[in-house]
Image 1 (cartoon, helix red, strand yellow):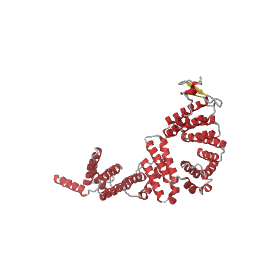
Image 2: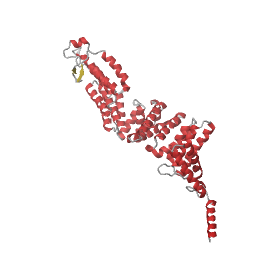
Image 3: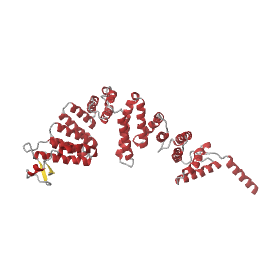
Image 4: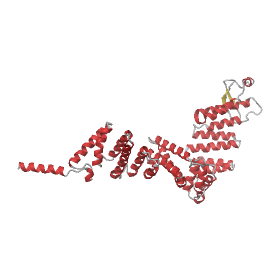
Length: 449
């Protein structure tokens, strides 16, 4: 009886190893028999070495798991594997070997798609985005956009505003390279994608979460690349969209895209922009359509109508940045009409939306300097320059971008300050004491001597 049990044990033991197979061979997670044990041992060793950042040792065990039981370790096997391969790629100096390792890296992404492309959180489309980013990071191909754009396209269509910042950034940068390769062929698509992807980036910025800063950088990169590309040229926009305005005059969405592009490119003097705004405003009034109509009125010198339209734009706008722009434009229009009090009110209103902009302070300073508050008093009339310089100093303090212009005006206005002799002959002017500049200005300043 004991002999039979012993023989049965040998038979079972022999059967276990006779039927040993890798996970790859039998389509299982760990394989069976000795291969299963080897897979589990190497999976454990690779994981431990990876945790302590001994990446060289981790790679030796990882590659066996990757080759023999590719479903073991889940999606992290491939995420960690891509890192381990890239680590070797960076360290390698031989060009031929670097290319081999680069191919291994791309194959790692392909294999992840094969085994985990249906992952709910990180499906094929997400994986393609990461593959594209690494392709661009390590390739020397000058026409990489031809390879990666299809991957990036699938990834960004899937993720939209939830696309990783790196992937979104890579997509637009490669679109620009494609555009430069054939502007006639890719021009309109590039313009449209600038708007579409920009809206997704703006949504992520507005979310104000831990990723917002990354998307602010993406948005900035997009704007810089777009302007530098030449696609933002007014003449180009007129050529591309001029024939489309009449065709799309009943299509509010298409007209809105045109208006945004012209505005972003600062082409608000274009007749195409004006016409698109008029048609769009009739279909669906928005802040942008109202502003477009306002700019046309400005060009026609219909200032009262322009002011009314900018007011409408402010009421329809949802962002302080846009409200600032429209209020500031109203201030300029009031200045052009000689209504200095209304111009100051609008400038102050603009500052209420964006307090760190210096231009409204400069405008107010110019209003003060141009004012004739004391037409019959040559000395007191000079006090307006004290008030003007105070505003220019404020402009410098809140907005470094306009500091040079503000300082230039300060240097000019100081030449018109009351002199010591002037102050001496005016008892109401006491050096170091407050003085109320009268008229519509009505501001207290410190008397200089």
